[in-house]
Image (cartoon, rainbow, N blue to C red):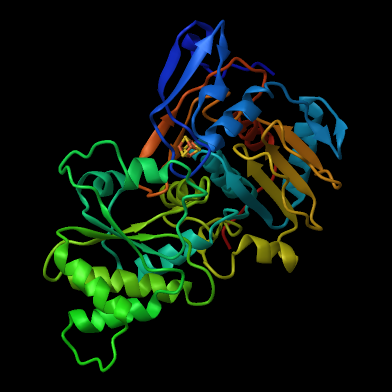
Length: 407
Ligand code: SF4
């Protein structure tokens, strides 16, 4: 198999690579600088620990051997075995999708050709957002707009700084802001803010409320002092999560009756926005869509990937994870894994393991930022012998004899 991943020639020289896109968390920074000495990328100079770990792991794994049932194989045999499983599957599940836009598009192409369901590993946030957006619409803003214009940021749910290491320095405490010199005022509503938000809506509507919480009175006061408040949605957990999101979206709509306010729904899932948007472009829907009948059917409840595995409706798991080396989930179904070359396969190796290039390290690519509003280009940084997901999928699709017919 001939590999040409179009890696960056500057990485071979003594210099620094500037303005790199980093794909290792949903913030998808586009300003990463990586020094180069004697052709070696000095990842230990990166100040973000998550980026350092992500780049180091990928750069130290530039080759990969395909495996069949855990035994080393050659590419032809591994691809033939994968094709055999795909052609014979009744309902394959294309899952994980911890990758860039090209990995997600490859999953949708396979689902169309082999007749299966597509879902993302960490899709609960996206599914909840979709449900609210489809029901009532919403008023949202971007990370850049918050950094440069917002004067009050209200955290709804648990903060997500741990998962997005540079969020605070880039968004909440930026070195400079384009349209104001004032720092952003920050207010945290905590993990269970439903009552506060409901009371604030009542107060805003000047309806009677016998005992508003002190937190609601304080939020009203801060909203009154602000020109551009933004409600950032962090981690929402538990059965009230969707209610909290709906109430916050309604509050933002109420405020906009008089003046500007916005919602900032943030995702921490790697590749979840790309999975959703590439699905919308491909078939008009997005995650949790089945193409088993030759046309798309979306059902956010029924086509939950984990449920399809647990109740045995899916009979083959195709796991795509190019950005994370974590093992795929254990399940009874046979597995085909398009994986990070350093992937830990655990005690039960998949039926077929196909090590593929990591976007932003071994090959160029594109990935959406966690606010869903920016597609960041990624560069290939190092020569390597790894195929990319798209190349393998094109070969499988071309050689397939399966027919999926509308019924
Ligand atoms: S915050 Fe996230 S995207 Fe930014 S450099 Fe760190 S790991 Fe990469």
